[in-house]
Length: 382
Image 1 (cartoon, rainbow, N blue to C red):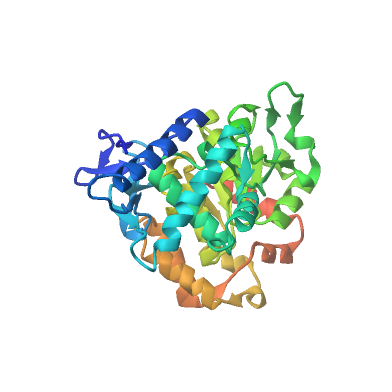
Image 2: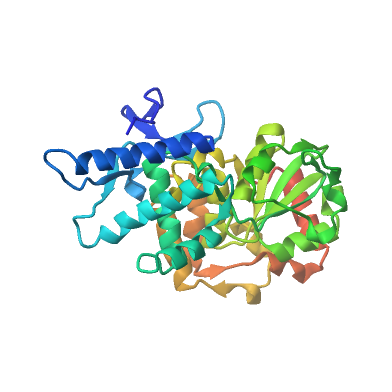
């Protein structure tokens, strides 16, 4: 298959950086056809053999971080290192076949000019090939294998993002041929972010905000939107209701491109999971290393942070869970973590405690907005 990596994109000792293209349906179908023809060519050669599928290695060891020279922007990339799916190895044979099954399904979807979610694709494959697919995780991993093989984005394969995200505040949005939506009038429910990345890419956006604030939790977002905090702090509020989905990250990235003068800040719990969520918005995820740079933004950490614990009753602090310690260990071993973030994480582990945003309500329900405003005015973020 043709080499789809740009040779000019080199970082770190001249290692080539691999990425996923955004392609038209016909271009994706052509790449699937080329993969199949190459496979058949080997089978029908004078010395027939079952070839391996060369996939870009998505392990942490193959991760690289590209840091901006003149900006604070950083994102995760994958270097030109490969792993394989082989029919000849017993432990990889089913994974090999799953790649072809998913490519076949994507080919049909693109031919029909349709789109599907990962969940819908799982049920289609479960009915079509029950011997090879038994869990959503298998489908998700195989989709990433296909992205690695064809070097095209998930959206190019006809797979839509399932979005949980919502946005509120000082933002006007207009979909093609639709009325303008004023996100400040959407109430605590906010404006639901579509999973159609093509639609999000065509949104017309206007704002008079001065800040973009990522809110980790849906309940906190609702409280802030209900209190119209975006009028006290001229801002756009956005949440993915926990770990960020692709559509929410995509819209945030678009806002960062459209409004480059607006600082982006994150309000997350003071625990390893909160920091992991912030890092995903900031750098992207290793599992989507071929596409991560398309969704990364320069995100500052507004709160909660270690010095905020003095504002919280001791009784509100709860012990770290084993899962928290696992996330902390993973973050500590990563080169993406900035020094100040690393210090915060070390303090969490050392104290053995975690704090949730809701603990600030101890001083009254309006305290959270005052807390945010004070930190922003004092530029107290990292």
